Amino acid sequence: MADSDGEQAIRDPAGMQLTQLTTGVPVDSSELADLYDYPSSDGLYLRANMIGSLDGAATMTGLSGGLGNDGDRAVFAAMRANADVILVGSGTVRAERYHGAHLPVGLRQRRQARGQGEVPVIAVVTGSGAVDPSTPLFNESEVAPLVVTSAPGAANVASRVPGAQVLVADAGGKIDLPAALATLHGRGLSRVLCEGGPSLLGALLSAQLVDELCLTTAPTTVGGDGSRIASSHSEVLTAWRRVLLLGDADGYLFTRHVRA
Image 1 (cartoon, rainbow, N blue to C red):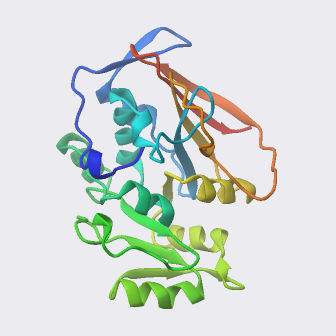
Image 2: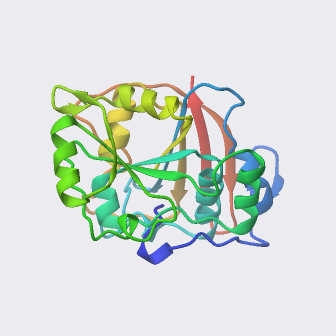
C-alpha cells in the first residue's frame, strides 16, 4: 500500500474496526498505533509492510494501491505513525507517484508527545541515482526526502535534483545496505519502515536485515505474471513467528511476523 497520487493523505478512519482473530477482541482505529508500535529499545529495528493477493500478486495493473481497502489504509497509517524513516525503492516511487508522508492530526500529536517529528522522512533507495525529479515526493513533501545511493549514483542524483539530501553508502559502486541503515541509526532514525518494492525488500531479506514483516492479504486473485512481495537473485530461507493476526469485515487479513 503506497502513498500515491490516488491516496495523497491517509484519512483517519473513524469507526472503522478490525478484530484480533486469535482472541475475537475488536480493535478500533485508535488502537492500531499501539498495536504496531516498535520495541522499546534504542537499537535499529526494521519493519517491512507489504500487501499481496490470495494468489501472491503484489500489484494490480502494476500498482499496489489497487489491492487495498480502508482497513489496509488504517494499518498503513498506524505503521507510518510510529516510524522515524520510510525506506522505499526508486522504482516504487516512480510507479506509485509517491508523495511525502501525510498523517491525521491525532497521529501527529502522538508523534510530538514521543519526541518525533510530525511525519517520518522518506528515504528513496537507488543504486544508480536515477530519481525522477517530477515525482511529487521531490516537490510537495512536508519534510524533504533523503536519497540513499552509491558513490556513482550520488552524482546522478545531484544532476537530477540539485540540493537533494543524499546519503552515500557505497560498496564497490553498489549500495551497502547495512552501512546505510547504520548511518540512519546514527542520525536518530532507528525505527525503520520499508514499503518496498519487491527488489528492495528482497535485498533486505537476503541480507537478513528485516526484523519484522507485516503483510496485508487481500481477498482477491489477480493472475497474470505480476511480482511477489519480494524478489532477489538468490534464495534465503528465513523463519518467522506470528505475533498479530487481524481481520476486517471485508475479508482482509493483517499479520505481523517477527524473525524466529
